[in-house]
Length: 324
Image 1 (spheres, helix red, strand yellow):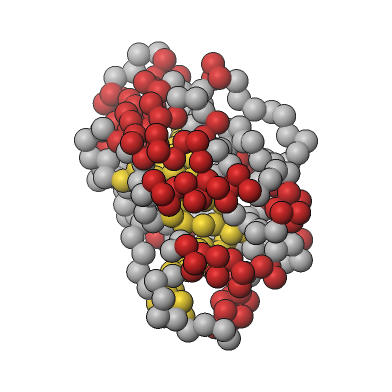
Image 2: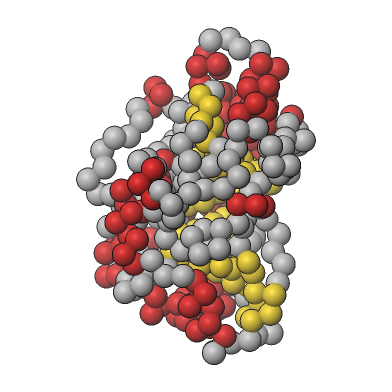
């Protein structure tokens, strides 16, 4: 079992397969950003298979494919198939903006992906374009395709921003209730230039919870998965909503994850810059045991908590570089 110095078990790996995205959500990827990694710097599908294999031998059971937008990586189905076939990997999930999901939902499901997190910050076409720089309808079509393909659960992630989309919360609840989707509200995070610029729209989710309690009955609920959300059931329906509060109520004491960038950098905390460069080890002929020991040693450096609030300017990379 992979443990850090605070005795937290690390069994969840978030794997970025690209730092590129076909959206430009202003809180994530500033529209002026052009500093993307080149494909020759990306881990290949074989290198990804080998690295994830080492993590599985160390006790990692859940892998989430992220980006950027993972569906822009041409080899995504191949990568997913290889990871799903690894011994010890019990859960393979994917985070996506769903803009290309109508085309790829069936192949992804066949490759072994079963759970989806889909970013959806607005149900209004103009507001959606304001936030993302792109169009809403392909996303809604992608969600419908995912439902038809049998993914379960499908979690809708809504970053709630004061003065931008906070008035849409109840409408999003009804949308998810109608379709049998799980809904999670997320606070903005001051990661990178985009995240810091969005800080003026920060809204603590305690305000949203209080508002929803005036309209619905919220009962504590359990939700299978490796995420940090606090979940509640809406009335006596099948709808479960979650609140992810990285700023107002950090959940670092139960953190069970590390993140691997598309270039093979193992990041120990989303809110810190300490990392282990694994790609040079892969390409210089390091043995599997040497790689596993390097991972063990790095995880022991995992910090106790992030410092978003204390030093918001510390993280220069955009959120898209690690998929959140």
